[in-house]
Amino acid sequence: MLMFNMVGELEDVLNKVYENPRQSFKEIKHFLLLEDEKELKCLFSFADKVRKEFIGEGVLLRGLVEFSNNCANSCFYCGLNKQGSSIKRYGMSRDEIMRAIGDLSAVNIKTVVLQSGEDNGLDPLWLAGIIKDIKSNFGLAVTLSVGEKPYGEYRLWRDAGADRYLLKIETTDPQVYAAAHSGRLIESRLKCLDDLISLGYQVGSGVLVGLRGQTVDSLARDILFFQDKNFDMIGIGPFIPHPGTFFANDKPGDIRLTLKVIALTRIITRDAHMPATTALGSAGADYRIEGLKSGANVLMPNFTPLRYRALYEIYPGKTCLKEASEKCILCMDEKAKISGRFLDYSAGHSIKKRHLFN
Ligand code: 5AD
Ligand code: FES
Image (tube, rainbow, N blue to C red):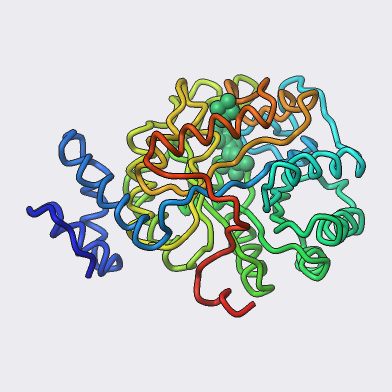
């Protein structure tokens, strides 16, 4: 059992959640509904201690390259949806991608996240070639985030050297999922996640907090799902309404609730890598420091070239649209220090046991 100096009933309940999440559904809900400042502080500091015990004080960096905003989907919350707005579409060339990777490698970052919309036109062999080049020229850890794809493509990219894959479930509630994804079914996303796990990727998932129809019950089930699947990485961010989407007039996700979901996920999953997401940095104000203090341990500086950055508008008000990446790193160094931590420039592979001997 973890040792805490603080005493009191709330710590006892948190210890129960920590020791036995499966039997703690009611308690998880209780914490999701907390409003009292003192009690919330207790929840966040418990999560912070679990983070410290399992991960330490380093804040890992992942360099993000948003290489295409083409998307064949029409997710009702996402600004890249195909019906969506009037955004100008772009796809970076292989040379542009390699230059962005050169930039992030030059400042000593050891992980690149290659992200795009779910682009039907994405040539799997082209991407495999890029992965091989990154591996041989820069030796970086490669994380892909390009959506639902057939098993064969996931295998091709894994064979080419990709280490990790991010695919958020967004919500585990089948109805909420279907209603936000224009009839697409959660089963297909679950199958993709299982495929990725079986191929030996370090797999990341996560949810949006504040999706239409989501309840505290469904968020509690989301958190238990993270533990069930033993994901290596979990990203949690607030929903931010985008004017070019079907959900334009929905209420934004609640920041406090987002922080509670982060904290409980940390307590329950213990050693997953968890970003203070860009969405958390873009929700009216920048709440990434609060994220770092509630269980998160990763920041993701954006290395998409400035001329494309504003076009990757998943949601409005995205932070760091005009900042040179180097400036963001300085700013992140500051955020880490304010949180009593330091930037960790290692590759930051998963520390889940199944990966330790890979
Ligand atoms: N608000 C916040 N996050 C969003 N995402 C997509 N649309 C929004 C939005 N409107 C998140 C999803 C997706 C990730 C790339 O961005 O969680 O997985
Ligand atoms: Fe980009 Fe602060 S992280 S300016």
